[in-house]
Image (cartoon, rainbow, N blue to C red; front, side, top):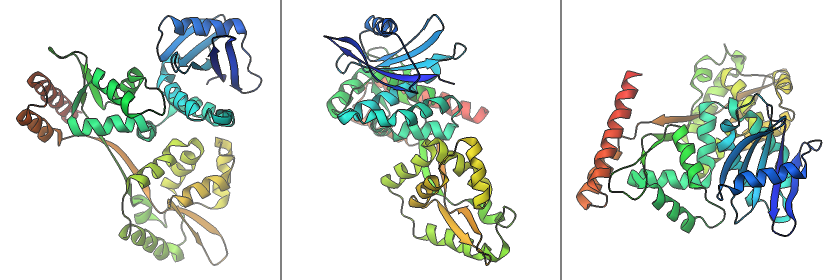
Length: 362
């Protein structure tokens, strides 16, 4: 587990400035800060470096010379810094979005917690974090529309379109590759590596089928069964999916304490006493978590004739990778319109065939 997080800024006059840290007892020398700067200086662009200085195991991500911020993660000596690269890139975006009045300082405890749990995230949580990132969402949408785009073209397009923050195209593409959504391939005749979409993501509310079918076996009194079933039926009869709702429900998967509670509710209908036991798993504010789920219409509270409250899921969440069959038509259209080189289109078909055959063998 990480030891601490520090935010450094490079000032041309004053040099390395430590502008934030968590926990407060974490300390690092000015000499070490200068070594962090020196490691990044040799690369001279946004990205992560990792190195050891004595007993310190450091993973550091910089926003690049234009912004000049460094997110420094101190790790135990036996930890692999590389597994935190995507998370550090996301944290850097959040810090830059909250520079005004140093709002990022109040976020450091939650950002540190996010980094701490990152290696143990479930696949659906990693996909949720990827999709919640505005820039990555833009990239995914463009790849859905075109199927394949060169990395250099993506980089120019993002910098022109997303003016609110910095763009690190390498970390963006790396995140997609790690999740198995794209492949980057050098194609003869193209100026840079081509990024091919190989899997898409489906995100939706779905009924909590297990609880719907077995609610009384999962903790709900028989007297409340009909009420619970009618609540679920009524909700989905009037539910209309929207992009805003997708982002809202993904926040359930992205927050560690909320996800812990949500996971419990996926398998059982519970009382307040059951929820209080989650404090042993780091869910310190049960009321805040329940409000979070209630506001997103994820839960229902049922009360029996003795006044005992039962907390149950009203809606579950499906986040799943799918094979993008629609891309065959996209490739066909691009061929007719001659909007992409034939070599790129043929390579995409080969990649999709390989992915499809692999999925069938699995």
